[in-house]
Length: 225
Image 1 (tube, rainbow, N blue to C red):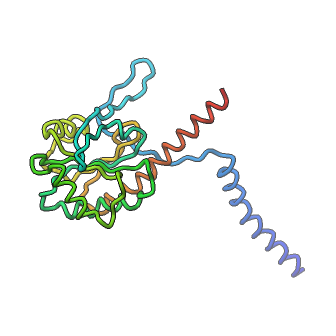
Image 2 (spheres, rainbow, N blue to C red):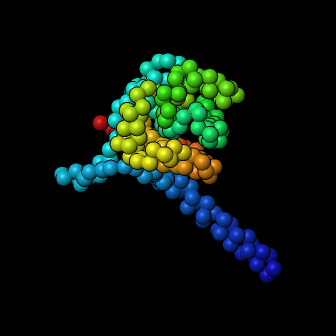
Image 3 (cartoon, rainbow, N blue to C red):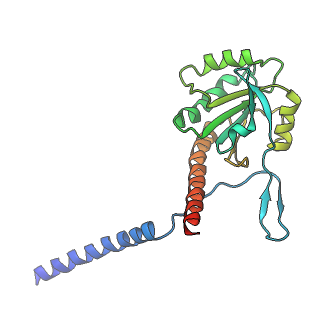
């Protein structure tokens, strides 16, 4: 009698263990992998025919980078990137740069993840000044070409910030934006807060997952055609 009770007990434990495991395996292997996606930011219109929400992409832009070379937004197509706005003579530049070094280092081996910083004092931030600052501030965390510092026509930079990123407060230069591979803004963060930059790092990974899934679905659909 005692042995039967033990067998029943072992059987019950086995059922309780195997049922959730089999449920997890079924939905993990046979089911679809769903994960949260990031929102879109900025102005949008609604398509009259389909009813789809169409968000505004960033406009094209072209400025001069720290090497004195023209850098066009075309170079960012297919890339996920963080946009920031500050000048190298800002008294808080050290703190902002230190925080932005985190994502720069975290994704150092990812060729399709960039950072782009736009000068808010282009008269002071010549390419030579930017180059000197970068060599000094990022000398232990510099990965060729992955962080672009841009200068040039100040009014055009202001216009990009106002109408492109739709950020009107040009005095608040601590704001950081996350942009996807198609030029849509997908995240907004306060660069003077460590927790928000950590959120940005996590959101980059989430955005990469979303992009990889879209590419997988596209290839799968192409194979079926």
